[in-house]
Length: 290
Image (cartoon, rainbow, N blue to C red; front, side, top):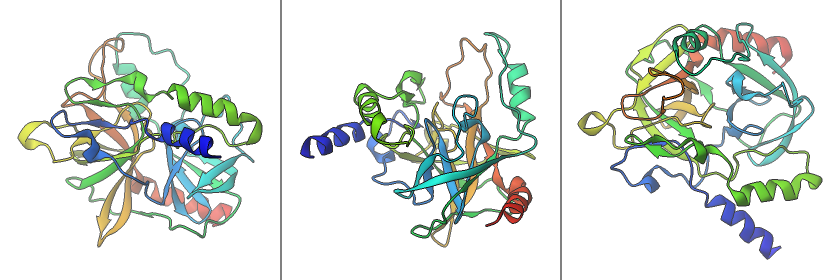
């Protein structure tokens, strides 16, 4: 038992997550524990608990082409639950296109014009933790948000180091060892969770955007998303209580696809604008039982 505990602790010290300022100590971004509504999705990415039986996530973190989620277990607030059904937004299109290595514009057009959001219904009601409320107003522009992620590391000078989003040796060994003993899929559970701040600079029908600033215009914990941060929630705090504003989805690419490095200063992150989907969320929950 002691050896197992040591093994898990070694995995937990794998310090990965989000792209940070180069001139701020990385440990200032680190969190000891995740918000209670934060849920690690199977394999990679994040969902959030928005109702006692429902998770909300970007649709692209649900890999139905190789994994059957229905009936499978998922940990919510440290307790195992099961997935009863998944409801994709009707305007979500699964990306199966080869976008080549040069012109980013076709990919940018595709990402801009689909709806990257899905709802996940749980078998059992979650009663030991509180869901996060959705920010439903249309006043996101200019808001300072706090966002979370466990993806690739890097800083504004280097950009993300994409390889760091992958599981390290110890985590891979642990996942291999536990396979015969659990139905739970591997997740980013043992990765270091970081948080960062940014200010929403642009909104449209589906998306909110913010730019990764440097120097005097940057916030003390300015940051942006890295590969593997998909679904990381962006929240505001209203009288100390979090409200969900967005879900990390993609980044704007302004260079040939085979040359672009995400996460450098002035890069733009794009989050699902959750308020735009509030009516659809309420409709799905009503039709499928809260």
